[in-house]
Amino acid sequence: MTKTLKIGTRGSPLALAQAHETRNRLMAAHGMPDEAIEIVIISTTGDRVQNRALREIGGKGLFTKEIEEAMLSGEIDIAVHSSKDMPVEQPEGLVLDCFLEREDPRDAFITLDGKALAGLPEGAVVGTSSLRRKAQLLHKRPDLSVVEFRGNVQTRMRKLQDGVAEATFLALAGLNRLNAQHISRQPVDPSEMLPAIAQGTIGIERRADDDRADALLAPLRHELTHHRTAAERAFLAGLDGSCETPIAGLAAIDGNTLELQGEILRTDGSEVLAGSRSGPVSQAAEMGASLAAELLSQATDDFFDWK
Image 1: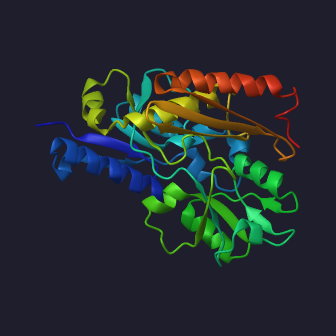
Image 2: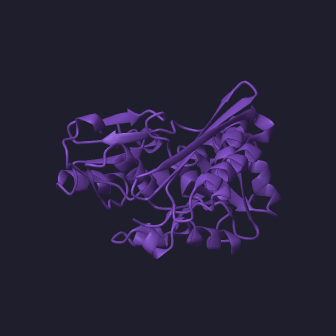
Image 3: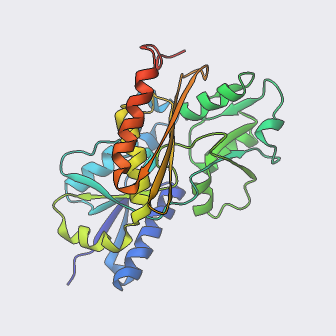
C-alpha cells in the first residue's frame, strides 16, 4: 500500500485554500485518489500571537518554524506556504524548489464603501501590519494615520466594520483564491505601489533527500514563476530582508527577458530608493543580487533605522 502523502499547512482559510489547490493539482497530475493525500493543520506562533507586531516576536519565520520542524521530524512530507512569508534561507535539510503558477501579485486597497486611496480624507486611519505597505503609504500620503492591523482576511474585515480603521490592504491573490468577490477592492497598480517579494506565489517546501516528494512535485513546478521568484528572492536576500525592513519588488517576463523592479524605503516613508534590472531569464538570481547591491550602496547607514 502506498504511503499517504501528508501536506502541512497553517489553519487559516487562505492557507487551507492553498493546501487544497496543491492537493488537487497533485491528484490530477498523478491520478491519485482522495485518500492518498492528507492535509495536516499545524498551529504556528505567528497565528497564535495576534496582539503584537510580527517584528516584536521574531519576524517571518514565525509562520514557518513549527511547520518546518514537523517536516524535519517526518510528521509531514511537504509544506505549502505563501512565498511572501518565507525567509530567504531554509533550515538545513529542507528546500523550497516548487512554485505554482503565480496569481495576481498586486495589492488590493480595501474599504467598506469601495473608496479609492486617493479618496481618503486627510488624517484618515489605515490599518496594516506590513512595514512595506506602511512606508509606501506614508510616502504617498504622509497626512494619513497608520495603525497595526493583524489577522486573516475575515479578522481584518471585522476590524474595518468595528471602525478600528477606515481602510486596509490585502493581497489580491488571497482574495482571488478565497473567491471573496463580496469584498470591495481597488487593485493597486505596481507603478503606484510595488508588492511584497513573491506576493501571489504558492511555494512548496520538502525535505532535500525526499526523492518521492521531489518526483511528485515535478509536474507542479511552473518555470516562469520559478524565474520571477528567483529574481525577487535574490533581491531580498541581498538586502538581508526581514519583517523589519520595508522592501518591495516585482519581476516580469517577456519572452526570454526578465524585468525586475525593486525598492527600499525608510520606515517612515520619507525616502525611497528604487532601481531596475533587465536581462536574460537565465540570470534572474544574479540580477536580483545586483539590484540589491546597487540600492544598498545608495543607502546611508541609518536608512533602515526606526523612525
